[in-house]
Image (tube, rainbow, N blue to C red; front, side, top):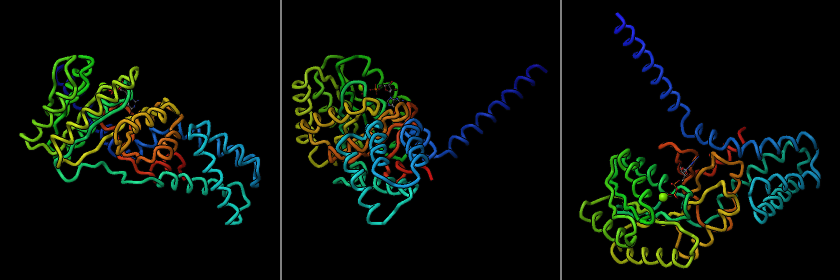
Length: 331
Ligand SMILES: Nc1nc2c(ncn2[C@@H]2O[C@H](COP(=O)(O)OP(=O)(O)O)[C@@H](O)[C@H]2O)c(=O)[nH]1
Ligand SMILES: [Mg+2]
């Protein structure tokens, strides 16, 4: 009888879990994004709303306060200046006078700023075979992003292989091993301290032999010696170009949104060293400084391709500028 009772409870708790999964599903991508951007939304929209309430009519001081909010949200000085100038122009052009009208113009302007970049916001993975080289300083979320990507690609029916190019710490290889076990994809690794370029070389040979669709390469990100790091990256890029000339290539730079303007600086350093083709902005869930996305994109002129909004395997999204701005400024 107790057994029965226990089983019944178990069944019920399984039902509850199923329901929670379903709710999670229903929340969907936009819901997840909105949740992930909650701090940024509070930092920007709530303050913008306060300003609008305070002013009623549009005037110069309103713009000054607006500017302050954008700078506080780490949109960056230059980018903020441009945004404010353009909003002012549009307000004038359209002969708007009510403070409440400013919000829509600002929203429109933010979307346009995110559009203003060369290149596509889709990852370069077609046609197969393709290779994604993931670069960025330590701790920004490279390995986590690779784990999430591998899972996503695998679920889309792709044949995925990962190369553990961060040979600097044994823990980095082990961490990748755990992610690959979760998504059931293969991993090419050497022992700690070995030559990262040799790992990538082996990864490419294995990808060819196994007819892999997408090879994702992790790399080390020690920035205390910028020159060495950049030499190492150059060597890896050379090997990839030589050994896998026909593969579709993506050099994905990962930057951490919680570091604010530092993310912009890091991105500039990496862009100098290799031909970065896309940016993944991580940890947006942990910061009110999500506005840094505007600074990164406009100051680098490299498209943002992915955003990380949590530590879970599903918390990586393809970047969509309309969704992003709508999540910060819900109607
Ligand atoms: N909250 C949050 N944490 C993240 C995100 N992406 C990565 N992390 C965490 O950031 C830490 C460093 O990530 P890791 O992938 O090891 O960085 P790496 O050194 O660049 O490979 C880990 O604790 C991750 O769980 C994200 O989008 N949101
Ligand atoms: Mg790592």
